[in-house]
Image 1 (cartoon, rainbow, N blue to C red):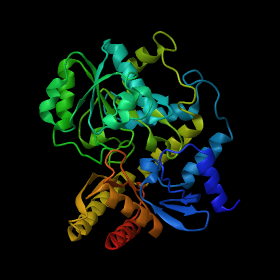
Image 2 (tube, one colour; image 1 turned 60 degrees about the vertical axis):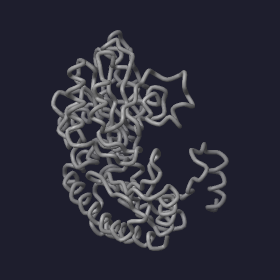
Image 3 (cartoon, rainbow, N blue to C red; image 1 turned 30 degrees about the vertical axis):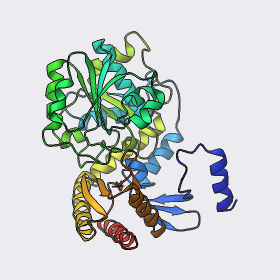
Image 4 (cartoon, rainbow, N blue to C red; image 1 turned 45 degrees about the horizontal axis):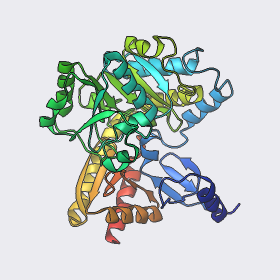
Length: 402
Protein backbone atom coordinates (compact mmCIF):
# COMPACT_ATOMS: atom_id res chain seq x y z
CA UNK A 1 0.00 0.00 0.00
CA UNK A 2 1.49 3.35 -0.99
CA UNK A 3 1.57 6.30 1.46
CA UNK A 4 -1.29 8.21 -0.18
CA UNK A 5 -3.58 5.18 0.11
CA UNK A 6 -2.72 4.74 3.79
CA UNK A 7 -3.43 8.41 4.53
CA UNK A 8 -6.77 8.14 2.75
CA UNK A 9 -7.72 5.09 4.82
CA UNK A 10 -6.60 6.93 7.96
CA UNK A 11 -8.99 9.78 7.20
CA UNK A 12 -11.83 7.43 6.25
CA UNK A 13 -11.65 4.81 9.00
CA UNK A 14 -9.92 6.36 12.03
CA UNK A 15 -11.82 8.83 14.21
CA UNK A 16 -10.28 12.30 13.89
CA UNK A 17 -9.79 14.86 16.66
CA UNK A 18 -9.16 17.88 14.44
CA UNK A 19 -9.89 19.00 10.87
CA UNK A 20 -6.17 19.33 10.14
CA UNK A 21 -4.28 16.17 11.14
CA UNK A 22 -0.68 16.29 9.91
CA UNK A 23 -0.94 12.71 8.55
CA UNK A 24 2.73 12.02 9.22
CA UNK A 25 3.10 8.32 8.43
CA UNK A 26 5.52 6.91 10.98
CA UNK A 27 7.63 3.90 10.13
CA UNK A 28 9.72 3.62 13.29
CA UNK A 29 11.08 5.53 16.27
CA UNK A 30 14.71 5.79 17.34
CA UNK A 31 15.50 7.71 20.53
CA UNK A 32 14.54 11.33 19.92
CA UNK A 33 13.78 10.67 16.27
CA UNK A 34 10.84 9.46 14.21
CA UNK A 35 11.31 8.05 10.71
CA UNK A 36 8.51 8.32 8.16
CA UNK A 37 7.56 5.64 5.64
CA UNK A 38 9.36 7.61 2.94
CA UNK A 39 12.60 7.62 4.96
CA UNK A 40 12.55 11.20 6.24
CA UNK A 41 13.81 11.73 9.77
CA UNK A 42 12.06 14.02 12.26
CA UNK A 43 13.46 15.26 15.55
CA UNK A 44 10.61 14.62 18.00
CA UNK A 45 10.40 17.47 20.48
CA UNK A 46 6.94 16.69 21.88
CA UNK A 47 7.49 13.03 22.87
CA UNK A 48 3.87 12.15 22.24
CA UNK A 49 2.96 15.01 24.64
CA UNK A 50 5.36 14.01 27.44
CA UNK A 51 4.84 10.26 27.00
CA UNK A 52 8.06 8.79 25.59
CA UNK A 53 10.24 10.10 28.41
CA UNK A 54 13.12 7.72 27.63
CA UNK A 55 12.82 8.13 23.88
CA UNK A 56 11.42 5.84 21.22
CA UNK A 57 12.26 2.15 21.39
CA UNK A 58 14.90 2.32 24.11
CA UNK A 59 16.49 -1.15 23.92
CA UNK A 60 15.92 -1.85 27.62
CA UNK A 61 12.21 -1.04 27.29
CA UNK A 62 11.92 -3.17 24.16
CA UNK A 63 13.61 -6.11 25.91
CA UNK A 64 11.36 -5.79 28.97
CA UNK A 65 8.20 -5.65 26.85
CA UNK A 66 9.23 -8.62 24.73
CA UNK A 67 10.10 -10.70 27.78
CA UNK A 68 6.81 -9.94 29.53
CA UNK A 69 4.73 -10.50 26.39
CA UNK A 70 6.29 -13.94 26.12
CA UNK A 71 5.23 -14.77 29.71
CA UNK A 72 1.64 -13.49 29.99
CA UNK A 73 -0.44 -10.45 29.19
CA UNK A 74 -3.88 -10.05 30.76
CA UNK A 75 -4.81 -12.61 33.41
CA UNK A 76 -7.52 -11.04 35.58
CA UNK A 77 -9.14 -7.71 36.44
CA UNK A 78 -6.51 -5.71 38.31
CA UNK A 79 -6.27 -6.37 42.03
CA UNK A 80 -7.03 -10.08 42.00
CA UNK A 81 -3.99 -11.94 40.66
CA UNK A 82 -0.47 -11.18 41.85
CA UNK A 83 1.38 -10.01 38.75
CA UNK A 84 5.11 -9.50 39.17
CA UNK A 85 5.57 -6.35 37.03
CA UNK A 86 2.75 -4.56 38.89
CA UNK A 87 4.20 -5.33 42.29
CA UNK A 88 7.74 -4.33 41.38
CA UNK A 89 6.64 -1.13 39.65
CA UNK A 90 4.42 -0.07 42.55
CA UNK A 91 7.29 -0.67 44.98
CA UNK A 92 9.66 1.35 42.79
CA UNK A 93 7.23 4.28 42.48
CA UNK A 94 6.69 4.38 46.24
CA UNK A 95 10.45 4.38 46.78
CA UNK A 96 10.80 7.70 44.92
CA UNK A 97 7.44 9.24 45.87
CA UNK A 98 6.81 12.07 48.34
CA UNK A 99 6.59 10.95 51.96
CA UNK A 100 3.33 9.30 52.99
CA UNK A 101 2.21 8.39 49.47
CA UNK A 102 2.93 4.71 49.80
CA UNK A 103 0.49 2.81 47.57
CA UNK A 104 -0.41 2.76 43.87
CA UNK A 105 -3.77 1.95 42.30
CA UNK A 106 -3.02 1.19 38.66
CA UNK A 107 -5.27 2.39 35.85
CA UNK A 108 -4.98 2.96 32.10
CA UNK A 109 -5.28 6.67 31.28
CA UNK A 110 -4.77 10.02 32.98
CA UNK A 111 -8.46 10.87 32.70
CA UNK A 112 -9.32 7.57 34.39
CA UNK A 113 -6.87 8.35 37.18
CA UNK A 114 -8.37 11.79 37.73
CA UNK A 115 -11.89 10.35 37.78
CA UNK A 116 -10.81 7.84 40.41
CA UNK A 117 -9.18 10.53 42.54
CA UNK A 118 -12.32 12.68 42.45
CA UNK A 119 -14.47 9.70 43.40
CA UNK A 120 -12.09 8.85 46.22
CA UNK A 121 -12.33 12.34 47.69
CA UNK A 122 -16.12 12.46 47.40
CA UNK A 123 -16.47 9.08 49.07
CA UNK A 124 -14.06 9.84 51.89
CA UNK A 125 -15.53 13.22 52.81
CA UNK A 126 -19.16 12.76 51.66
CA UNK A 127 -18.81 16.18 50.03
CA UNK A 128 -19.82 16.77 46.41
CA UNK A 129 -18.17 20.03 45.41
CA UNK A 130 -14.77 20.46 43.82
CA UNK A 131 -12.30 23.20 42.98
CA UNK A 132 -10.38 23.31 39.70
CA UNK A 133 -8.67 26.09 37.74
CA UNK A 134 -9.13 28.10 34.59
CA UNK A 135 -6.82 26.79 31.91
CA UNK A 136 -6.82 23.30 33.42
CA UNK A 137 -6.91 20.09 31.42
CA UNK A 138 -7.48 16.79 33.24
CA UNK A 139 -8.90 14.56 30.51
CA UNK A 140 -12.16 14.02 28.63
CA UNK A 141 -14.10 11.45 30.65
CA UNK A 142 -17.13 12.82 32.49
CA UNK A 143 -15.43 13.34 35.85
CA UNK A 144 -12.25 14.79 34.39
CA UNK A 145 -14.26 16.93 31.95
CA UNK A 146 -16.07 18.44 34.94
CA UNK A 147 -12.74 20.02 35.90
CA UNK A 148 -11.84 21.15 32.37
CA UNK A 149 -10.92 24.81 32.78
CA UNK A 150 -12.43 25.93 29.47
CA UNK A 151 -16.07 26.93 29.00
CA UNK A 152 -15.74 26.26 25.27
CA UNK A 153 -15.03 22.56 25.80
CA UNK A 154 -16.97 21.99 29.02
CA UNK A 155 -20.28 23.66 28.20
CA UNK A 156 -21.04 21.15 25.44
CA UNK A 157 -21.71 18.65 28.22
CA UNK A 158 -23.55 20.77 30.78
CA UNK A 159 -25.98 18.74 32.86
CA UNK A 160 -23.66 15.74 32.95
CA UNK A 161 -20.89 17.28 34.98
CA UNK A 162 -20.04 17.57 38.66
CA UNK A 163 -20.32 20.74 40.76
CA UNK A 164 -16.98 22.48 40.19
CA UNK A 165 -15.90 26.02 41.02
CA UNK A 166 -13.08 27.37 38.86
CA UNK A 167 -10.42 29.64 40.33
CA UNK A 168 -7.82 31.64 38.39
CA UNK A 169 -4.59 29.64 38.51
CA UNK A 170 -2.00 31.51 40.55
CA UNK A 171 -4.46 34.00 42.12
CA UNK A 172 -3.70 33.89 45.83
CA UNK A 173 -6.74 35.99 46.78
CA UNK A 174 -9.11 33.39 45.28
CA UNK A 175 -7.81 30.57 47.49
CA UNK A 176 -10.21 31.63 50.27
CA UNK A 177 -13.03 30.14 48.16
CA UNK A 178 -11.79 26.71 49.26
CA UNK A 179 -14.00 25.93 52.26
CA UNK A 180 -15.41 23.03 54.25
CA UNK A 181 -17.96 22.17 51.54
CA UNK A 182 -15.19 21.22 49.10
CA UNK A 183 -14.25 17.56 48.67
CA UNK A 184 -11.05 18.18 46.74
CA UNK A 185 -8.92 20.69 44.90
CA UNK A 186 -7.61 19.26 41.61
CA UNK A 187 -4.62 21.14 40.24
CA UNK A 188 -1.76 20.65 37.78
CA UNK A 189 1.45 21.82 39.49
CA UNK A 190 2.39 23.19 36.08
CA UNK A 191 -0.47 23.77 33.67
CA UNK A 192 0.25 21.90 30.46
CA UNK A 193 -2.51 22.44 27.91
CA UNK A 194 -3.14 25.85 29.47
CA UNK A 195 0.14 27.05 27.96
CA UNK A 196 2.95 25.75 30.22
CA UNK A 197 1.95 28.03 33.10
CA UNK A 198 4.20 27.81 36.16
CA UNK A 199 2.82 28.42 39.65
CA UNK A 200 3.86 31.66 41.36
CA UNK A 201 6.32 31.17 44.25
CA UNK A 202 4.55 29.77 47.29
CA UNK A 203 1.23 29.25 45.50
CA UNK A 204 1.11 25.45 45.73
CA UNK A 205 2.02 25.61 49.42
CA UNK A 206 -0.81 28.08 49.92
CA UNK A 207 -3.20 25.56 48.36
CA UNK A 208 -1.77 22.87 50.63
CA UNK A 209 -2.29 24.99 53.73
CA UNK A 210 -5.84 25.98 52.78
CA UNK A 211 -6.84 22.37 52.06
CA UNK A 212 -5.41 21.27 55.39
CA UNK A 213 -7.34 24.05 57.13
CA UNK A 214 -10.68 23.20 55.51
CA UNK A 215 -10.34 19.41 55.37
CA UNK A 216 -10.44 19.36 51.57
CA UNK A 217 -8.16 16.92 49.77
CA UNK A 218 -5.39 18.27 47.55
CA UNK A 219 -4.94 16.31 44.32
CA UNK A 220 -1.92 16.98 42.10
CA UNK A 221 -2.55 16.02 38.50
CA UNK A 222 0.96 14.94 37.50
CA UNK A 223 -0.10 13.24 34.28
CA UNK A 224 2.29 15.47 32.33
CA UNK A 225 4.73 16.53 35.04
CA UNK A 226 5.38 13.12 36.59
CA UNK A 227 8.27 10.72 36.04
CA UNK A 228 11.01 13.27 35.56
CA UNK A 229 9.49 15.90 33.28
CA UNK A 230 10.28 18.81 35.65
CA UNK A 231 13.71 17.47 36.66
CA UNK A 232 12.48 15.49 39.67
CA UNK A 233 10.44 12.31 39.81
CA UNK A 234 7.39 14.43 40.61
CA UNK A 235 6.67 18.14 40.35
CA UNK A 236 5.52 18.00 43.98
CA UNK A 237 9.21 17.47 44.77
CA UNK A 238 10.26 20.29 42.45
CA UNK A 239 7.98 22.65 44.39
CA UNK A 240 8.41 20.93 47.79
CA UNK A 241 4.70 20.44 48.44
CA UNK A 242 3.10 17.11 49.36
CA UNK A 243 -0.50 16.63 48.18
CA UNK A 244 -2.94 14.02 49.49
CA UNK A 245 -3.10 12.28 46.11
CA UNK A 246 -1.04 12.28 42.91
CA UNK A 247 -2.51 11.13 39.62
CA UNK A 248 -0.08 9.76 37.02
CA UNK A 249 -0.01 8.57 33.41
CA UNK A 250 1.78 9.54 30.14
CA UNK A 251 5.52 9.10 30.91
CA UNK A 252 4.68 6.41 33.46
CA UNK A 253 4.44 3.70 30.77
CA UNK A 254 7.30 4.73 28.46
CA UNK A 255 4.93 4.72 25.48
CA UNK A 256 2.58 2.01 26.72
CA UNK A 257 -0.86 2.74 28.23
CA UNK A 258 -0.51 3.06 31.99
CA UNK A 259 -1.80 5.34 34.72
CA UNK A 260 -2.27 5.34 38.45
CA UNK A 261 -3.38 6.99 41.65
CA UNK A 262 -0.62 7.43 44.25
CA UNK A 263 -1.91 7.87 47.81
CA UNK A 264 -1.69 6.45 51.33
CA UNK A 265 -2.51 2.73 51.37
CA UNK A 266 -5.44 2.95 53.79
CA UNK A 267 -7.01 5.69 51.70
CA UNK A 268 -6.89 3.57 48.56
CA UNK A 269 -8.10 0.46 50.40
CA UNK A 270 -11.13 2.23 51.84
CA UNK A 271 -11.91 3.64 48.41
CA UNK A 272 -11.66 0.53 46.26
CA UNK A 273 -12.11 -2.42 48.61
CA UNK A 274 -14.73 -1.26 51.15
CA UNK A 275 -17.19 -2.59 50.18
CA UNK A 276 -15.43 -5.09 47.95
CA UNK A 277 -14.96 -4.08 44.31
CA UNK A 278 -16.02 -0.48 44.85
CA UNK A 279 -13.67 0.59 42.09
CA UNK A 280 -12.28 -1.83 39.51
CA UNK A 281 -10.53 -1.66 36.16
CA UNK A 282 -10.03 -4.27 33.46
CA UNK A 283 -6.72 -3.21 31.95
CA UNK A 284 -5.25 -0.98 34.65
CA UNK A 285 -1.73 -2.09 35.50
CA UNK A 286 -1.45 -4.25 32.40
CA UNK A 287 1.68 -6.36 32.99
CA UNK A 288 3.30 -5.47 29.65
CA UNK A 289 2.83 -1.76 30.34
CA UNK A 290 4.14 -2.21 33.88
CA UNK A 291 7.22 -3.99 32.54
CA UNK A 292 7.84 -1.02 30.24
CA UNK A 293 7.31 1.45 33.09
CA UNK A 294 9.66 -0.43 35.38
CA UNK A 295 12.37 -0.50 32.70
CA UNK A 296 11.90 3.23 32.11
CA UNK A 297 12.32 4.07 35.79
CA UNK A 298 15.57 2.09 35.86
CA UNK A 299 16.76 3.93 32.74
CA UNK A 300 15.96 7.33 34.29
CA UNK A 301 17.97 6.42 37.39
CA UNK A 302 20.89 4.60 35.74
CA UNK A 303 21.38 7.13 32.94
CA UNK A 304 21.05 10.20 35.18
CA UNK A 305 18.08 11.54 33.26
CA UNK A 306 16.71 13.75 36.04
CA UNK A 307 19.94 15.73 35.97
CA UNK A 308 19.98 15.66 32.18
CA UNK A 309 16.43 16.99 32.14
CA UNK A 310 17.42 19.93 34.34
CA UNK A 311 20.60 20.66 32.38
CA UNK A 312 19.14 20.39 28.88
CA UNK A 313 16.01 22.25 29.97
CA UNK A 314 18.02 25.17 31.32
CA UNK A 315 20.06 25.28 28.10
CA UNK A 316 16.95 25.15 25.89
CA UNK A 317 15.17 27.91 27.80
CA UNK A 318 18.25 30.15 27.58
CA UNK A 319 18.69 29.41 23.87
CA UNK A 320 15.01 30.06 23.14
CA UNK A 321 15.19 33.35 25.03
CA UNK A 322 18.15 34.38 22.90
CA UNK A 323 16.16 33.58 19.77
CA UNK A 324 13.12 35.43 21.14
CA UNK A 325 15.06 38.65 21.69
CA UNK A 326 15.71 38.82 17.94
CA UNK A 327 11.98 38.64 17.05
CA UNK A 328 10.04 40.45 19.82
CA UNK A 329 7.16 41.05 17.42
CA UNK A 330 6.75 37.25 17.06
CA UNK A 331 7.70 35.73 20.43
CA UNK A 332 6.24 37.27 23.57
CA UNK A 333 7.56 34.92 26.24
CA UNK A 334 9.57 31.78 26.95
CA UNK A 335 8.85 29.85 30.14
CA UNK A 336 9.23 26.39 31.56
CA UNK A 337 10.74 24.02 34.06
CA UNK A 338 12.87 20.99 33.24
CA UNK A 339 11.91 19.77 29.77
CA UNK A 340 8.40 21.23 29.90
CA UNK A 341 8.82 24.47 27.97
CA UNK A 342 6.40 26.86 26.29
CA UNK A 343 7.15 29.52 23.68
CA UNK A 344 4.35 32.09 23.56
CA UNK A 345 3.92 33.67 20.15
CA UNK A 346 1.90 36.73 19.12
CA UNK A 347 -1.01 34.72 17.68
CA UNK A 348 -2.44 31.27 17.07
CA UNK A 349 -1.86 31.73 13.35
CA UNK A 350 1.86 32.42 13.88
CA UNK A 351 2.19 29.41 16.18
CA UNK A 352 0.46 27.08 13.72
CA UNK A 353 2.58 28.37 10.84
CA UNK A 354 5.76 27.79 12.84
CA UNK A 355 4.72 24.27 13.86
CA UNK A 356 3.91 23.36 10.25
CA UNK A 357 7.13 24.88 8.90
CA UNK A 358 9.24 23.16 11.56
CA UNK A 359 7.68 19.80 10.69
CA UNK A 360 8.53 20.39 7.02
CA UNK A 361 12.12 21.06 8.12
CA UNK A 362 12.25 17.89 10.26
CA UNK A 363 11.35 19.16 13.74
CA UNK A 364 8.13 18.04 15.45
CA UNK A 365 6.58 20.63 17.76
CA UNK A 366 2.97 21.30 18.72
CA UNK A 367 0.77 23.96 20.23
CA UNK A 368 -1.18 23.64 23.49
CA UNK A 369 -4.85 22.72 23.49
CA UNK A 370 -6.12 25.74 25.43
CA UNK A 371 -3.44 28.23 24.40
CA UNK A 372 -2.76 27.59 20.75
CA UNK A 373 -0.49 30.60 20.53
CA UNK A 374 1.97 28.71 22.76
CA UNK A 375 4.33 26.15 21.20
CA UNK A 376 5.48 23.34 23.47
CA UNK A 377 8.99 21.90 23.64
CA UNK A 378 8.94 18.59 25.52
CA UNK A 379 11.67 16.30 24.20
CA UNK A 380 12.62 12.98 25.76
CA UNK A 381 14.52 13.21 29.03
CA UNK A 382 17.56 11.62 27.37
CA UNK A 383 17.78 14.22 24.61
CA UNK A 384 21.37 15.30 24.06
CA UNK A 385 22.94 18.71 23.46
CA UNK A 386 23.48 18.16 19.73
CA UNK A 387 19.79 17.37 19.32
CA UNK A 388 18.86 20.47 21.33
CA UNK A 389 21.14 22.61 19.15
CA UNK A 390 19.54 21.10 16.04
CA UNK A 391 16.06 21.92 17.34
CA UNK A 392 17.02 25.53 18.05
CA UNK A 393 18.57 25.92 14.60
CA UNK A 394 15.48 24.53 12.83
CA UNK A 395 13.15 26.66 14.93
CA UNK A 396 15.23 29.78 14.23
CA UNK A 397 15.16 28.99 10.49
CA UNK A 398 11.36 28.73 10.62
CA UNK A 399 11.18 32.08 12.39
CA UNK A 400 13.30 33.72 9.69
CA UNK A 401 10.98 32.35 7.02
CA UNK A 402 7.82 33.92 8.51
